[in-house]
Image (cartoon, rainbow, N blue to C red; front, top):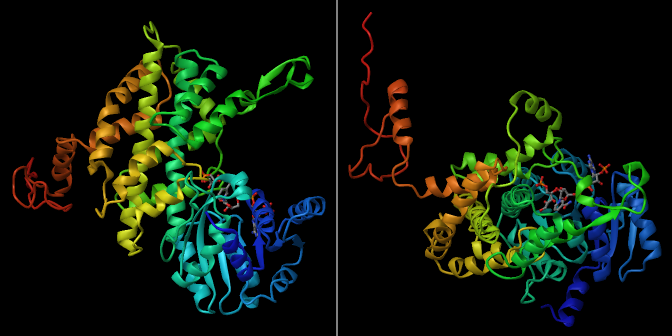
Length: 519
Ligand SMILES: NC(=O)C1=CN([C@@H]2O[C@H](COP(=O)(O)OP(=O)(O)OC[C@H]3O[C@@H](n4cnc5c(N)ncnc54)[C@H](OP(=O)(O)O)[C@@H]3O)[C@@H](O)[C@H]2O)C=CC1
Ligand SMILES: O=C(CO)[C@H](O)[C@H](O)COP(=O)(O)O
């Protein structure tokens, strides 16, 4: 935990910060930094956002104060008195970020630092780093996790970029970041280049796998076991309290979400003394990405495919979202397909036992999501020479972020604390032991769920991931034969040294399975 004297030292170095963007995240970051004692200047292309924040600041005095600007040049000028200007961007990724950089670039000086706290494709981050380097400015791609509330009380941060610039800003970031249960700040220097944004992208991939698994579990309990929201909230609360799923942020918020009720209005067709669950006014459409407002799950899929990492839980979670987003198309397909809908599981002898299987299955899927994500990070770090230490990723994810899962972090911490270079976490005895132990439950849930037509995309993808990711004789033997038949792609032979198992590489053998007809 940072001592008060350290805090004063930090504030001696950083008097002010310029925040670009006053939307969900930027507005709360502005308040947080002014509460820490910095003078906050803030600009947003959307003037209403600035006016709203300015009004808040007039009614709520903070230590440092907040000054909103409509004019971007005045905004940059307000930071001129500092030894170096420090900016924090929190706006839409891609072209909007490029356009704002373009607007302020001529007013930047050698030594200025820009923290990009939005989500971003790491390659675009690296392009900006190169562009800024030419004028001595440091662009740091910084993953920020925990949502708008954490942006105010302290998020989990994964900054990546120039080592010296990172060293400069770390004391301030440590002051701002969330704390883990031991009081350590959830921020670490991830590495050079776009490594920080890469790690945040993977965080969001794991987040997707966990979100889908939990949504499927909620539906299983509600439709398959006929439990009401209040009963499901109680179950989630127990799971979050102790055992392998303890300290899982998404379970924690699920409990409150399942209990949230509001008065029904006359427009709802109810009399105004009645209440309804807020969840019941939420449609099943997840539209981010479908409407181009996000990119992280999509980047995850592209990344895992291009780096040859099998990430079915993360990918399938995203495809569920995509299918959910286009509800009109889905409803039309439903009319044509006439498929059975999720229904109560028949002849349940022991509901408690199924619920316990479900708990273990969720744990297995969460663990599978972490394995897939961490494997992506290792591969990218090796390819890009980033030297990412997985322990630091885990440290950043210990508190304040969406994928906080104390039980899983406690399992992974000793594994990652060894010097072993983990390219595949299923090779770790502790992880493999847990995946083995929970496998039967995972299978049981997929079987029971399939028989009663539950939705199980991430859960069944995790089961298959474990089956084929740890399989000894896959059906791909047949696939490889067919590919050699039609494409002369070559194959490796069983039991031949250098081929079995051999490196990942094209086999030297070809067979004329059906000799071509002459003439
Ligand atoms: N919400 C969350 O939980 C988290 C979000 N993030 C990331 O943080 C960033 C901000 O997210 P959030 O605050 O939720 O988003 P908001 O939509 O609330 O805010 C985005 C801001 O960017 C502005 N913007 C859009 N286009 C441009 C442009 N061309 N030039 C300048 N500004 C522009 C928007 O203005 P306008 O209103 O006019 O569109 C808005 O003020 C995103 O990159 C997001 O991925 C990261 C972690 C968590
Ligand atoms: O970054 C986040 C959380 O960590 C944001 O909430 C983000 O908007 C989530 O959306 P997506 O799943 O589309 O990335």
